[in-house]
Length: 137
Picture 1 (tube, rainbow, N blue to C red):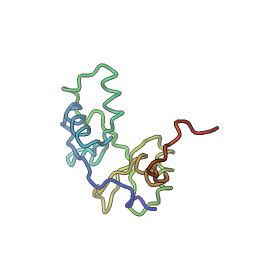
Picture 2 (picture 1 turned 90 degrees about the horizontal axis):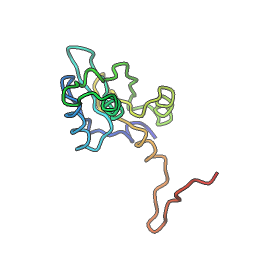
Picture 3 (picture 1 turned 60 degrees about the vertical axis):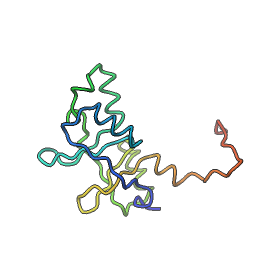
């Protein structure tokens, strides 16, 4: 299976001047764990994740005054739609992150997350069958 088959194609994009509260509000409303930060006059394409927001709030920073650009990861690993899910998972495991921006001709066309990959790899739940609370050792 390929990244194009698993990725979310509705990409939340924000600007570098958005506050962390604005970003968090948009991410929550769309139920996504990351926003693509487009800064055409600066760093180009970056990513702001729920962990970035959480780290800032945990440090006692004000989400109403902190701007996305100060918390955006700009050293981003991008995926291609033609990558296999194995390639995407390997890149995530190697880099220690949970989201990849998917680029096609240098344009963001999607985001693939660990959850997207698991959804594709996990067997479908059968009606009436429960999922074990613990995985046997």
